[in-house]
Image (cartoon, rainbow, N blue to C red; front, side):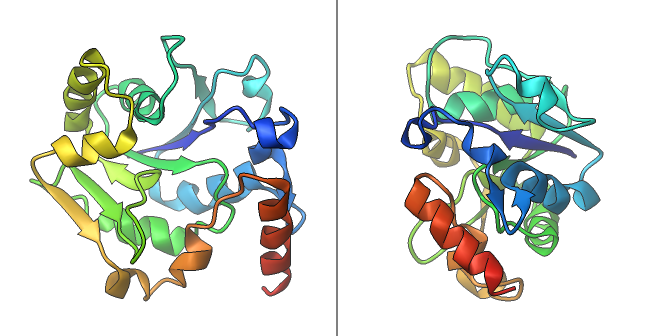
Length: 198
């Protein structure tokens, strides 16, 4: 399985600064995500369009979207295509509290005939902290060809999805923390406060 860190979004609320390069608890968010993925994957790749992305994470392969269009499904599709037939665990690069235990749990649920193993909290699905079969690629391509750009549309279109629910997730931590994402300076401050509780 390949681990894909998706550097999506424009970081406009950070003045254009790449939010995944911000630190939480003295460690860059991208490094925290990489550390969570590494025990469960054979390779790390970063999905990013920034010209300096190759300098972000030592040892990771960097791939860019092959279209100027924007949408969350594109990042997933790029990761699937770059895996060259391998399964992929995708994590957004603004999720500082993803853990090794969470990744291992979700990965363990990706067994045939399951096409995707996706955490589901009481509030929402988490398609950017999920494991995808290589067989998702043609489905993603078909959706994009129809103009669909939402990652959630891929989940809806797949024939077999394993939803990893709250009772299972509780074994590895509080979902409010595990899936916390940093979109604003206020989120970053909140994440820093949460990290101090460790």
